[in-house]
Image 1: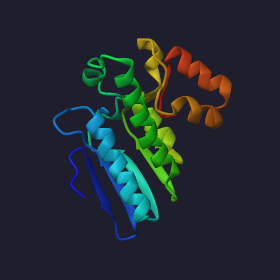
Image 2: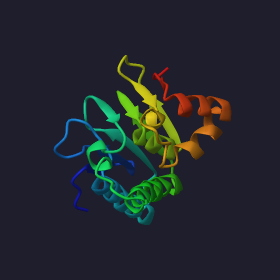
Image 3: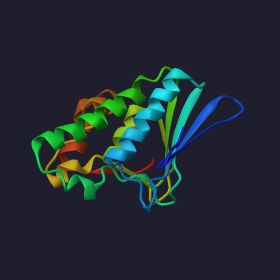
Length: 175
């Protein structure tokens, strides 16, 4: 599989390791191209299931910063916004539906879509370093989590805690 923004390897134990490494940027963000590529990876893994999947960042500074704001700000119509939101939902739903254990290994920042990808995994582990922070800060720019975070977070931490995080944009550290 030809990949530009992700690196997929399977080890001797048949565990798949998926590194997010958005080409040409210092920070991992989700563009249409990145999401489409992740969708193809999910389809491939569903067809040839490993024992498990670990998703991690190849970038030193963090897991993922969320949607590509440069692309996001070029959205000119409700139809374009819906297409981008639908794509993220479809791709993260594919990750959530994989028939084997999935793990998000979080180091550094994990914001917006990064947190939503982590929530699509069955398991999450975060280091407790000072730079690790997870949040759904979409409310701070006047939108809501659009790629499944609003439906996946409440069962994990309770409705009141999830609403607090989503309505304030407040983040959590790795502890």
